[in-house]
Image 1 (spheres, one colour):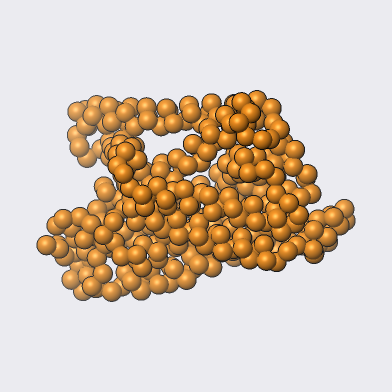
Image 2: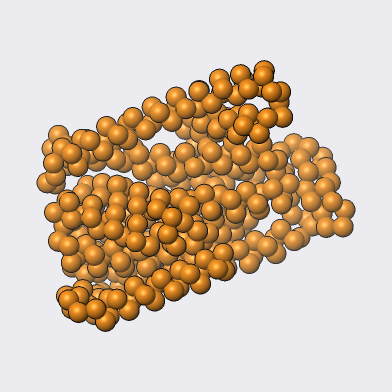
Length: 341
């Protein structure tokens, strides 16, 4: 993570140098010079609120008996890892898995709950594409865009939901076949079992009435979109909410490109998508760059502080995440694994 932070800092310096020194970017420099700092500060506050939504979802999925303090330490540390490690969110989940395993939670539970967590945090994005895509396509929402930019993304998102559910069932059937042929110790069988169980647990959690979980999922996404809305207002005005939301949801797919902090992939994806939705390129570029700066700096700073506190929490012998599991084990310094009753 230290190496990633240094790499990210170097990339940021290069981007700033390009904006400041390259001829032809005078209009962009002028927009930054006249930006409204109050809106940018509001964007930073909204990013913190989005992080709190992430923490709520983490606690609801992994362990409702975990203290809010520990949930916050792990959640914000994960967000910091996601900002530094460009793996589509897997970097943060890996850090969370390390902390949970260090606290005594079983690998099997971590694996299936990580799958469920990843799927659940993706649900608002996919559903949002369907709602705003169909709404713009049929004229329920105000906005100007072709069917290729409204109806098609909605259909793809709906197909993704069906494919995810089907993949869980397929993984379960494949695991049973591998179990019969190779026995229960097969690594592939364990992976397929975690995928199948994770999909099923995500569906169970969605069926169960859980206001905190639903609120966390909506808050995590909505407040992050609101950060982009705030940066647009910092440089002038924002496009309509439906256009902004759909462009955000599609443009964020650029974060899957493996570059430090997602720099380049997310930026180009967001700017390109907004331009396709008839947002002026200069305004879109300034707003997206400011949004990306907030989205990297706020989680990185809070995540670094949370990680320091998390290591201290995990070093305390009285700490036990495994109280989420009856008869679980916790690692106690000097004694090794101790069973909790």
